[in-house]
Figure 1 (spheres, helix red, strand yellow):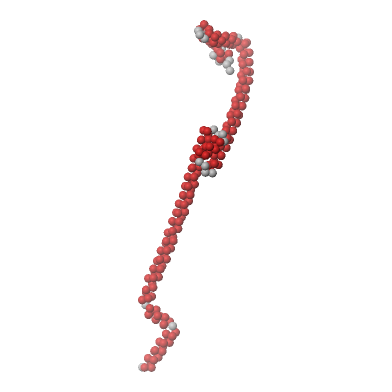
Figure 2: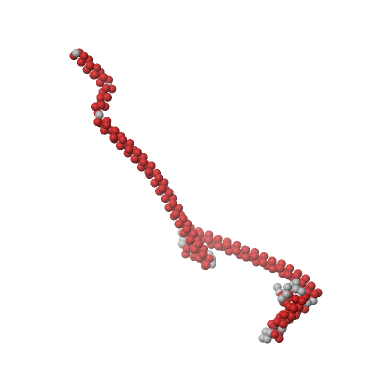
Length: 230
């Protein structure tokens, strides 16, 4: 919003002397006689400069103008604030609607990707829902990449679980082997003791006969007969 002060190129707090010097400078610049070939533009601008100086050079008129201008500026500022607020609200509503539409398209693409469809199918589905081509391509690429990343993560998790199970199995196997070796050692010890028993069968049988009651009576009877001889 241009003011009379803007026309002369001075601030609102300019003094009378500053206003006069500014007027002379602007009048000389825009005088029709100094603008050959652009007389019409110069003449209109020169008239605006003269009108501005006529008001601002008069203290009473300048006071009225400042008051009116100040009031107009308040109204103008208030109107501009309302317009900016309305514009901000419209832009916020538009962004919210756009974000909602984007989220809906992403959700749709995710559903088709979960069903095993590839990137081209996702792109076609989005276009069918009147999604802008560039955005449809972006969403299809992103969702396809996400699904691929998920599949790789699942494969890695399965491999890690299998490796963990294999490690647990390898830890249990030595214990079984150790038990088998211990059983083998016991068997060897038993087998080594067996020949000793087989090498002395008489002793074992003798001990058995001595321990039997019939063997004891036989011995006493033998001693009795020897006594009769002598």
